[in-house]
Length: 215
Image 1 (cartoon, rainbow, N blue to C red):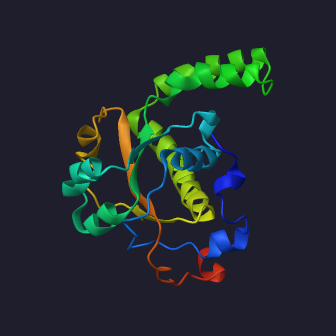
Image 2 (image 1 turned 135 degrees about the vertical axis):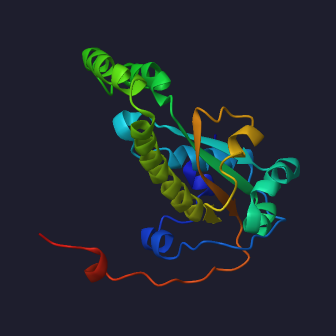
């Protein structure tokens, strides 16, 4: 994988944050290589998550055949789906704790965590996660996956691409259409990504005085 500098177009934080838009029209002739897409996902995956279980799972749909497969589920977002370089179906993994040994074991190997701390944390969290009620676990992983989704949009912007988070699609059937276990993987959003044909529309944001209380 090449370095970040090879692809990233801007490190201007204010530009990345303030000029991000939800893009509705993409240039269908522009494709994002799988190498660069992997880099974008890797950078986005530095997002925080509960006990670092990283429950986000991505299905990158970047072929015409793949897009046509999910097109019937896209509803009124069909144009965005078909013109984007790719559509990233983002899911949250209810059984994310299965990766606990790998995540914490690698942390020990890299010197990020002592082995006794790893063992103590896994002994405490593993049964708690394995026995957590569905709604409790869903709340945890939806929050975590929302964090990585926002970070993915910002990283894409730094690479010069536009995005659009889509909630209007057939969530009931998306996992099965993509050959995933619907009892394990909870759909979060579809995220279109590609080269924007325009800058998108600005939108009004409520002032801090409306959204914030001080105590």
